[in-house]
Length: 113
Image (cartoon, rainbow, N blue to C red; front, side):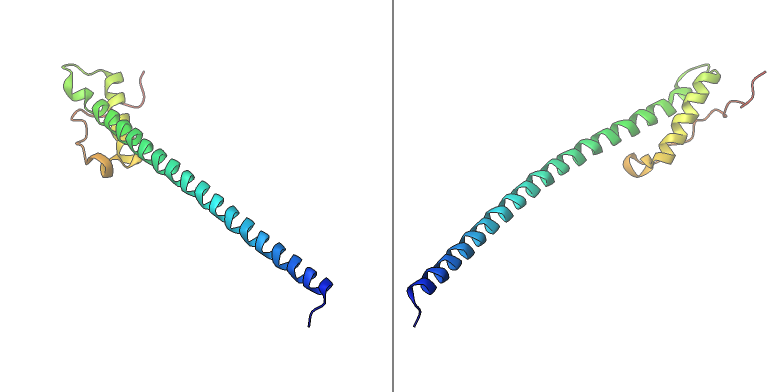
């Protein structure tokens, strides 16, 4: 048989364990809730990043076509078109928006007198 002080000690330990368990469950739920909010924020950021990547790729695609759309393309226009084409390919925009043709005019000479 347990004496009164032992019963109080046992009851105190049980109350402490129940309190710790409740605190642990609440803390875990808060952490999971914060994790869920962070995940939603990350998903939102990825969607926004996807839009930015597509817009950047579309801009590069449009600039790459500039040399073909003007009647006389000078060295600046040709350089812009070829640089945009190279960036489109290197950045991986082919996977985002599909392949584009190379600018129809030749690359400008690298060295100018």
